[in-house]
Length: 236
Length: 321
Image (cartoon, rainbow over all chains, first blue to last red; front, top):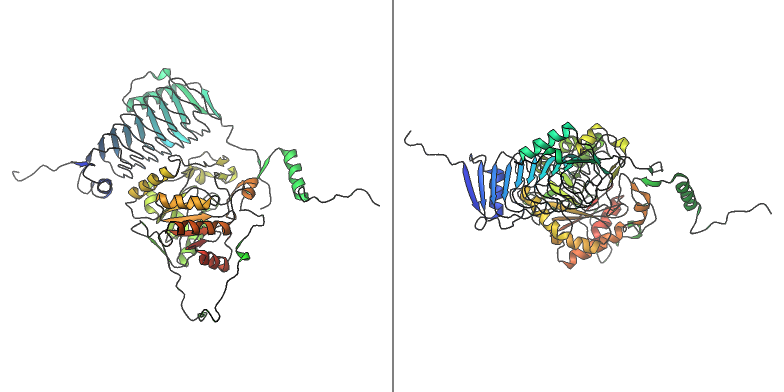
């Protein structure tokens, strides 16, 4: 027993010294093999594409602000940003959890298929655009064209929403607590049901929040754009 | 003298009057597939200067002509080798059936070239049958996922198509069957209209960063193509090169689509022949010919068209699928 050394389960990268390529390559190809499950990233200094393309149950803690596409196409991993995030945070996420402790720029959670994205602060334009099944909880407000063409998934907005919320929605559902400046084409307010309140409660709980689910409004598609009126009988 | 006769008008010919009357009666706009049908300058308007006294001929069918083509030599660590400078353009699963995607993959593999996915994601059939498969990243991102990114041999970021540059895709509800709907995360039977803009970037400066993200995700292994519909080709090709593309694909207005508005197909974009000249000029202007490969598509019908496209400076051409 005396010769046994503790096996490290954590590793730190300092992006003022280590390259982004070194970090991402390690996360993609070496961390799991070395038995490392926790990775701490220091001095991100707004770098783009940090921890993108992860495909393992890793816990990545980023201390500072990040640029574009943090945790892009994430699968399985938990990525926490102790700072603000640039455009496209958790874009195309498939599963796992991404938590932005600060604010998020444009297109947060764009086209995300699964998993949970939590933004404690505000999110800018086009949050949840093209959403395909993921859940998004925004502690603050969202910019215009959020949930544009959102196809599936749920979005909880604890603050306000700017113009054209939910434009051209498909089956995704939005829950918004504050003021909505305007709804987008084919989006409409609908009554909250017990199922909706339970869904909001569950998502807020997962995000570590405690707002009253009864104070949210539901926005969903009127489905009037599901079929268009065109003359498709032309000869080819 | 018999009764009044219709005097044919150049501007309001019978076809145009027929269209106006149908549109007025129905209140509907026309949509259809394929590319532009109007007469445009094309490769038939060019002829080869062959061997004579000033050029020495090869012995046809005896001497070898090298046709191997390598794509993605600029940044990718695993470029694509094609046996011939002809490949298969993208067309969506949904517009095409899984059997057709499978057949295209088999045919491409048989002759040593690649095929391309399309809007709607990658089918297991085309991945299995295609030795080399290019995976499109489109504005809709239907079915786009990291597993298929890793399974692909190259990624093609689609900015636009020649048939409808700047326009999103359309797929009538009859084609959105359970499998298509599942892959696209859409309700079955919905008349689907794809986005025309990418959801997570908005211009050439952003595209630089998007390409780097895809390179990071693929560990800089796979070639990244950028495909543009032919409009402002000279500037678009330059911007694609600046953004970091390994390969630029230029699709002229004769290029096909599964469906879009007829008025869009016939009145937007420029012909493949004109687009090719601009694209080559742009690469030469940047001193990038040979470094960034050029793929040309749209109305490529025959070996003669391919040969003319190559002679004008393309590296590869896409015939219609």
